[in-house]
Image (cartoon, rainbow, N blue to C red; front, side, top):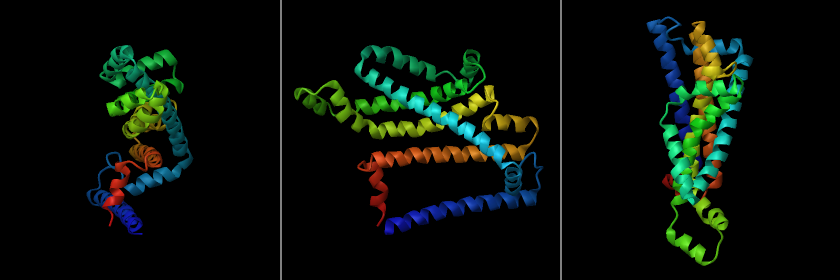
Amino acid sequence: MMRRLQSLYESGMVLIVLIGTLLLWEVAVYLLRPPPIILPAPSLIWREFLITPGYFLQQSFSTLYTTVVGFVLAVALGLALAVGIVHSKFLERTVYTLLVALNSVPKVALAPLFVLWMGTGIEPKIAIALMLALFSVVIDAVLGLRSVDPDMINLARASRASSFAILRKIRLPNALPSIFAGLKVAISFALVGTIVGEFVAGSEGLGFAILTAQGQFDTPRVFVCLILLGLLGTVLFYIVEFMERLALPWHVSQRTGHAAAP
C-alpha cells in the first residue's frame, strides 16, 4: 500500500513539474513577446497540432514503424554476433574490431551511402536505425555473456553440459541485466537513426515533417514534431524497461526501488 502511494506521489510530482514548465513557458512568451518564428507559446503549438492531427499521427506512425523494425533487427543481429564473439576468437578479432571501427565513424556521414545503395524508400532508414542501435546491443551483450563466474562454467563442463546448454542456462540468464541495459540505449539510438534517415532520404515521418516545416519557416509545426518525438522516445524506452521488469523480477536493480519504500 505504501509503495503504491509513493508511486502515485512520484507520478503526481512529475505531472506537476511538467504542467509548471508549460505554464512558465506560456507566461514568458506572453511577457517577452518573442516572434512565433523564434519561440511559439505552448498554446500555439497545441493549436497547430489540432489543425491537422491526422497528419502528425501518420508521420509519427511512420517513424515508429521504422524505429521498431530497425531496433528488432539490431537486437536479433546484435545478440547473434555477441554469442559468436564470445565463443570465437576469430570473430572477436575481426567482427568485433570492425564494429568498433565502424562505430567511430559519424553515422550521418554514412547515411548518404545507404541512400545510394538502397534508394529512397524505407530500407535505408531501417538500415541506419539498425546501424546506430547495433553497437550498444553487441557491446552490452558481450559484456554480460562474459561476466560469468568461471567456476560455474567449469562445473557445468565437468558435468558434461553442452556449449548450448551452458549458453541457455548459465550465460544468457546472467547476461540479461547487461543486455537490457544495452537495449534501453539501443532503442533511443534506433529512433535517432530513423530521424537521420528521414532527414537524408525521407518522404514521410517526423524527420521529413521537420524539414518541410523548416523550409516553410513554420516553427510551431517543428515544435509539434519535436514534442511527438520526445513522447515516442519516452514511450519506447519505458516499454523496454517494462519488459526488463517482467524478465528480471529477481534482479537487485528491480528490488532497490521497492526496498527503499517504507
